[in-house]
Length: 635
Ligand SMILES: [Zn+2]
Image (tube, rainbow, N blue to C red; front, side):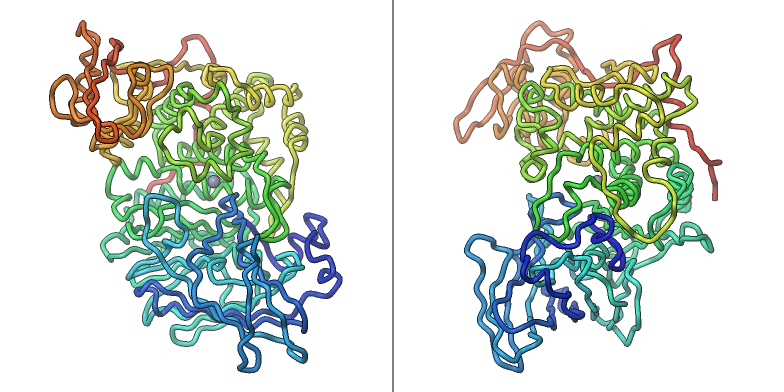
């Protein structure tokens, strides 16, 4: 997400003195500080109140509500939840009109003699639903203030040039955590230091009744901490062993990047079933929200093991270094997702590596994760028509596509499939250099020193190719383009074989797949009959070309019986496991929009859980990649 500090940041780093819209305004100096007061005392009633004092000039004025959210790579600012919008000057109301094309623009006519207007608005906090809803950010006991929810800003200047003077009143006695510097506090009202708009939106505030802070490098510079908030006090206890893993993560990231581009770093961890689950990256913090029981449920904890490593890595890859198409000057200019296979994809790879190096996953679990990723991508029916590059270009629609038909539609596959591609890059560098160089060297070169405050340094595809060539000379352009532009049926598995392993399928459970099924209550049979179901039998996905689909099973059917017995995930597990020794088909009875159907799935392959198997006589580069760079710690 966006960024940065003081005014140096966007305007200088991007070389953008002006934004393209509002050229007439852009000739003028930026207005003075915009005062923003947020009253969060009614969060339990699901309402935020905000007041803004905006310096203006008489005449036509356009104010924007943030639309393109940097960490979302999408035009999804939660404007449907804005209410109570009013403007006035000197106590007299000023009429407003929402632009009839751009729903994020409000047009006003500022009366003569007026040099500042007051805006007031409410933000309605929703509850998590089946779709992504960034308005689901608070509960009776906590909230995460995403400043973009309560902000309007004048058209015509880059966000880095617009200064805000923010303050926040929290419910009585609630604590708060944020990377935003605090100027003063009086009772429950916090006044923050003046901050440019881009850095303000990049700096969420976590607040709640139940909050605890875990320092990760006491006395070290810069400070790192985990800030935990939850709906109940019991969830705040994090085991010393897990805190040690997080400490190791900080040390491993330091060893990998040998730099930091933040003044301090806050993992804002919210354990709650009442807010949208997400991981959202920022320069100096991450907004990490998971279910309340995540840290005490082994399956849920394993599934979320990569969350901190991923979001933390974004401080370097995504925040400090950002594709120019994603480094827009304000929240209004459209973004281009073409390099999301670096921004998100390489972050996913480095997050996987850092999870292993910090002990958050064992080497075996990490191999299972890579195997499951490879198997899932190898069974994407949609790879014959949609390239991985296109999934990045189309990110702004694919983020919001449902899980049904994910195999044939494809999803935001630039996350998982890029793990395979960057593993392929890493093992290729190691092979070319006799294991003397690796992606670790790339990270130091591309994301490394000098240390500093948050800034953005943009890059293009050619810069990635050039940086790789500095590590090991090779035709990286062709290497990457072949994998990104392919519409072949096969997934890029060269990193697994280059690492000394191969993808195999068998009866032994894959730990990540089993954890996913345990948490969801459903069943993932992607690599056997090509089916994913929910716990109630509703089909989430059915892969064209695989046995279930070829028998007529499609997403949205609900399976009610398997081989004549009432449906349960266990029953379907048994039918698949027994298919090797049974002569007949697996008979599925299902309801299809009210009609009862029977489908005979012709399959005799038994369980096909994905694993990595060592290839004897080859260099085990994967083992080298997953080894810690620093000594392991114990509490
Ligand atoms: Zn990410």
